[in-house]
Amino acid sequence: MEQRKIQRVGKGTLTISLPYWWVREHGLNRGDTVIIEETHDGSLRLWPAKSEAEQTLETCKINADLLDQPGLLNRLIIGSYIAGADIIEVASETRLSYRHIKEIREAAKVLIGVSVMDETEQHVVLQCVVDVHKSSIYSILERICNLVSSMLEEYFRAFIEGNRELAKMVMLRDEEVNKLYYLFSRALSIAQKKRSFAESLGIAQPLETSFLAIIGCYLERMADLSKLGAKSVLKILTCETEVDKDALQKLAEYYERCRDICEKAIRVVFSKDIRLANEVIRKYQEDIEFGENQIIDRLRYRSVKCDTYMLCPNFTQFIWSMKRQAELSAELAEMIIDMNATLSSNFVSVGSISLNKLGKSTIAQQPIR
View 1 (cartoon, one colour):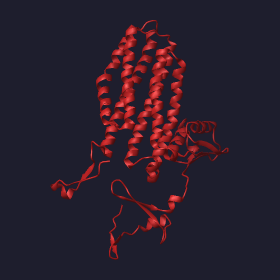
View 2: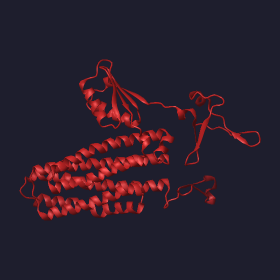
View 3: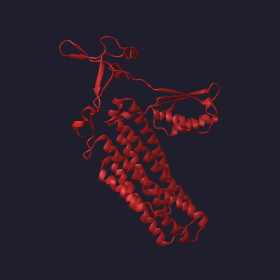
View 4: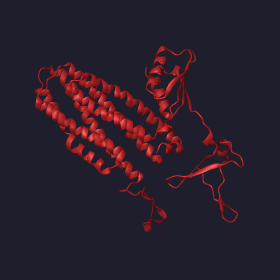
């Protein structure tokens, strides 16, 4: 960071010189045009006008020879995709192993818009051709929310109906959530680098990307818990379990309370209703935190026609999945409240106080959005 003084040219024009290193780096000359934009905090953002018309692809190269741990190459490819790379090259000085090729193809399957463009014994080139400009970030988030909501309902219904196929369907939906989550994270990463791209996605303020990243993470974890619940259901069904009606009724009531909290939290993501968000937090604290152990005790001692040793761990995991989803929903609701407080809302007006005028209690407020 450096300071530069404002100079007066003529009678009314104020100017400031551009750093020489910046001008040289961008290849600017006398007569070239730059674009100036005022950001939400009053600062100015400046960039060369010619860069607006230039289309460049971000590339990265992964050295497969250094990746001797299983799964590491897969994770690096996904990480490069999320970071915004358009072309990902995986190369070896000798020959790519079977494990490397397998991990490359597995990664390509879970990344939307990615395909193999070139392949030899020594390298594989992946290219992402998806254009996230065509939809807003909130439309991608809405698709994730719809899938998470369906999974919440289906894994418990699979248990009640004894439906193995429905439990397997939940596990398939989790794969779709993962694909959308990677695309969502990629869009946010690019938005952090390019302000104009962020605006095209519907992100009004830079700090909003940080909140959206955390919200997306919460939703993805909720989907993972539905998958875990579905796996537990499949194990429970293999036991041919019979649970007494009273315990089953308590379990259904507990699930409905958890699901109600989850569904309200998902609504809050789009409505930004902080009263509803506060209700989600309060209901979790009052209705969920201590209900889990009571249900587990009933199932442990009152289930019949089943090996108790096999039954209880699966039921414990099944019920824990519900509770953890409700807990994540409360954390998600709290994040929405924090987001409203930070980015301004009808309830909170964000401003600043000049230290030089602190004695006069002068507050420079930003307009309420």
